[in-house]
Length: 221
Image (cartoon, rainbow, N blue to C red; front, side):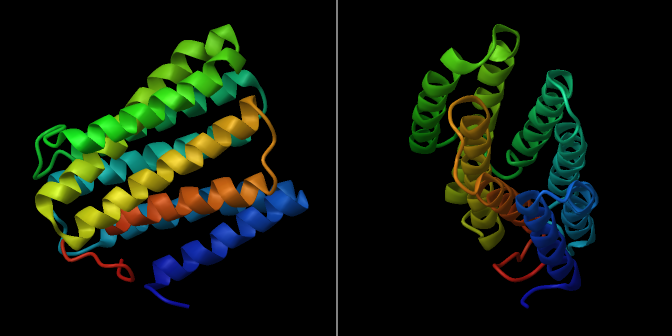
């Protein structure tokens, strides 16, 4: 199994969480899911040398907020879903701030246009099917998520470092994961949704966490 001990632990815990979700074993899922994200936090905090302390702080903050979102989304009821959405929204804002390290906000137009089109298409599909109380929150979330992904790609084009490309891949996977989650929840069930949503989610978080290391490449943490 490749990677550092933390990456190996993440793979095991993520597999447990996904398997438990598919097999409907809630207790294992509720334990393994947050622990997998804790591994991502540890990867970011232990990576040396960091790109910068500012970048590390932003990515680590986003991961901690993602952990809060993980827990809230496991709880029943629309209120917890809204709070989980808020936690991830704040996390994406933290990522967005981190991703301006070394690259001005939206300094390249093409990624911004591409993700704006993707976000707009997602909103067209989702918003008619979302309840009125969540409609604005979902729209704002889509804007922030796609802005974060666009800036990650901008930074990869400007910085041209392995870690920046890894962060861009992670941010794009986050869009894929959240789009799948939203479609599965509001539009139509996706076959093997837990596998599709959670695997892309942890690949995204792992990539962002690993990008903290200045020399980050595909198998280091």
